[in-house]
Amino acid sequence: MIYTRTGDVGTTSLSDGTRVPKTDARIACYGALDELNAQLGLLRAQLATLHIEGAPHAFEADERLIVRAQRLLFSLDATPHDVEALEHGIDATDTLVGGIFRGFVLPGGHPVAAVAHVVRCVCRRTERELCSLSVADDVQRMLQPGMMAYINRLSDFLFALARKINSLTATAETLVAE
View (cartoon, one colour):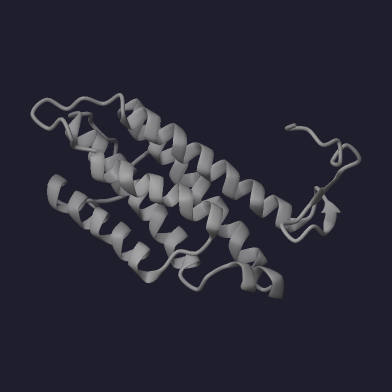
């Protein structure tokens, strides 16, 4: 059964079974991780709808990185190898589009790129939630050392992905400084 009724009074269980108020900072952090995971799922579904003439597999590696990210958000055990995988994805995109960062861009462009920007913002908020809890001993034990670096790099990857989508779909971007 999906419902237990145990949360009907405003409490929920941590992974160790401890009951806490649903307003507990750890629950807010779990919620941010869950939201980021769902947004990544939306982005992956949207990427699957893109068809780039002459490059039918243009986003396959990105989709694999997103699936990996979704799994890591459940386990919170990213390794330096996972961080490097995102960096390789960013570097490959940088090479493909001839340089990712040429100034800040306004989020938008192609609708799927706009989704990538939204997910990037959710990722940054999740990172802030994790940082605010990282001083607590129980959260430090929960997070593997590479997880904070991974979340930080994930948002960079999402920025690069938005730029890649706009580039491959020949959709103009608007620089902040225009």
